Image (tube, rainbow, N blue to C red; front, side, top):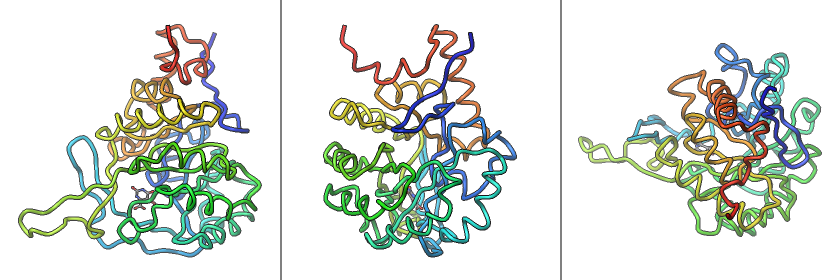
Length: 307
Ligand code: RRO
């Protein structure tokens, strides 16, 4: 019997539990040269705002021990141009498309959500990014506050597709914020975004990244992701979680699933190997076969079982 890798996230069924992470697979079908996009659970598109946005000054990325630091600063073409130029290529390749949206204000999120309504027949969900560390030095980290999280999610209520909330582990209030997101209509939370970090160029004696600080991702943050998913699942077991943070192989994916994630996203690993997301999906199948797991969903939250 083939392993059943399907999973459920809120009201949606996905044939596979592995997705791209927002910001790591571009805005369109770039990865299709390496990966059959229709085989993935979903392709999560880099965060879009209603209007085009140029992003932060260079340099924007830097490798760190076991990870990387980015200060991209939300560069994007805006929702309307994306719907016209990028969405068709994704749909053509059979991708289930999840769109990440961002804003500087509650009204900005509402504007992005309104613009997306024209594409709701071609997307499966919207990931509301409340946790970008790279905008005005982290001044718009809505996910550090349950009231701001509630206000942003309420402003996107006109969307008919399910909404997920992408949250931050840069706060000790993540459980409280996840509860607020759920009460404000999020069907799932994506845990975690990058951790705020910084690197100083010792020759120039100045911050290295154009945006000064940046978001740390990759293997270095995996234990933080596991801990955060575990804590939120323990406190709110009926809230679906999409796990992200240092997923580099089947084992790191299984860890997040055992902690309570119903699916995982692969991000930084894609920069090292554009086929990583497909390899991790294959690796999950092999792991389940080797461990006589016939349905991957039986593993979700397994680390919480006692006895
Ligand atoms: O674009 C970025 O700089 C960025 C975003 Br939107 C995000 O959510 N997380 C991140 O590390 N970088």
